[in-house]
Length: 126
Image: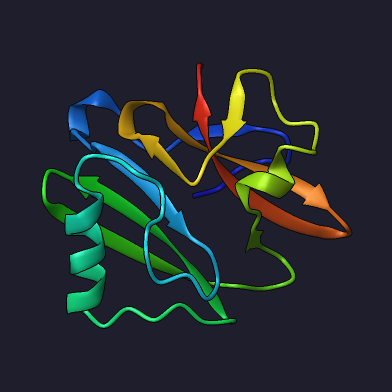
């Protein structure tokens, strides 16, 4: 998914029926954000033996009880910024950083921070 620095790109559309989108930070192997289905998502992560590590992060797309996961390798050219760090940056209007977002409002933005490029998941009102 190509995103320009400072831009916002929606993750899903109403047609694909995604209920929730979450990110797992490096070393994170559970979803901590409370939502209906959180326990099932964490049980799925346990069942597949997911282990967060230094070298990657993951995007979870949750539809009903089904979880799709995309594991992304970290690099100097692209990494994941957590919502707490994102709250201190100038982000596009209408974009609020979150660890999990309802599917119809889920979006990524790309930022330059400390001489690196990052994406951040958030709630987009656009």
